[in-house]
Amino acid sequence: MTHEIKRTYRYCLYPNEAQKQELARTFGYSRWVYNWALETKTKAYYQDEASLSFTDLSGRLTSKKKEEETEWLSEVSAVTLQQSLRNLNQVFTNFLEGRAEYPSFKSKKGDQTARYVGTAFDIREENGKRKLRLSKMPGLINIRWSRELPSKPSSCTVTKNAAGQCHVCFVCTEDVRQLPRVNGEDGDLEFVGVDLGIESLVTLSTGEKVGNPRWFENEYERLRREQQKLSRKEKGSNNWERQRKRVAKVHQRIQDRRKDFIEQLTTRLVESFDVIVVENLAVKNMQQNGKLARHIGQAGWDQIVRRLRDKCEWYGRTLVIADKWFPSSQRCSECGHVDGKKSLDVRDWTCSECRTHHDRDINAAKNRSRHRKLSRAEFKHPDSWIRPTRLKSSAPLDEW
Image (cartoon, rainbow, N blue to C red; front, side):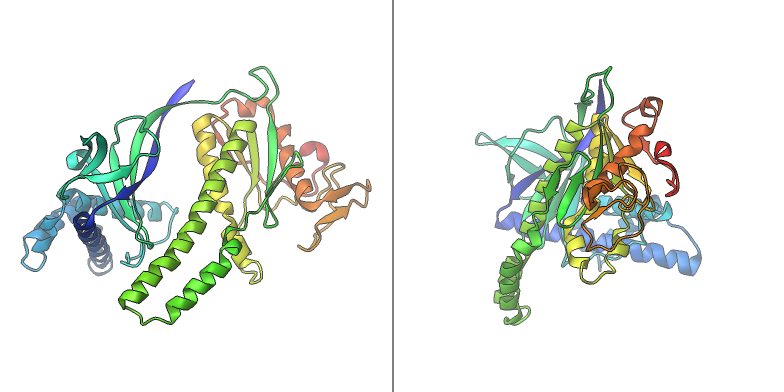
């Protein structure tokens, strides 16, 4: 069984000097339009009690281009400016539906983006190589094609990170075949409980532990040296800018390593199990612990759950989010006895009822895998998103 999805493909981009200057101008104009539209929309709401739609802002932007002070907006592709308005409109939609906070202004110090749609971009061949054409961009831009596109892209987003590296992301539509059941169509569903941690990044109910690569700690000394060099240079000078990019490259290296590891890990879990049960962690609350805040922030727990959710939806698996109040670390996975709250330094314990010795993380993962008690009818549609009700700590073993 196949179904159609939209997926983003990312490639390295290598513009020449003239193209870099044009991209920098496009990034700046797109950012200006976004900030201008956000300010205009906010003032209209608080001063005039009016809600400006995308159409209203688009009309005002057209008038803005005719003004002498802002006629420079016509120097770049109008598509990128219109997409900035659409991006802002989507951000407000997310805010009103409770999925995001109120939008903030964009800074030139962060990642820069510009989106092209329709005829504003295409892929052309030059000297036997496929290159990217962008509207009002001099010449064709070189791309390193690490893999083939599955179909004609509907849009592309050009990005530039703090390290000065450029990438392009193509949005393509493709048919994805759902994965067959691990034990066959007539076999039992293969469940797994997943416990996220720091010492072991992922612990499975099968007993397997995936160690934490500690990407940040491995690069900490190098990052510290580069930041020390940066602090000794005059801010705003050419030497300071070059050193700033070196620091940014270290951060980007950490980010890329984390992303690659999580992609491989989540793909393996989705291919190996039919139903994956993870915990609903309040990461922001957990980071109130000053001793563990940095380690929790660098672990990427939210990114793991997010990628599991996407891939389960793509490949026909089921992801279950266990209630955060379920005492998975307190309950014995053998007899169901709740042995009480335990401090973080207790990594193994013995049940006072059945005297079974438990590894804390493996026991928690086994307790989450007890969602297998749900009937097969509830998993009739394996690509569904299941939100189980809160499990009471006093419930007997047969009721979990």
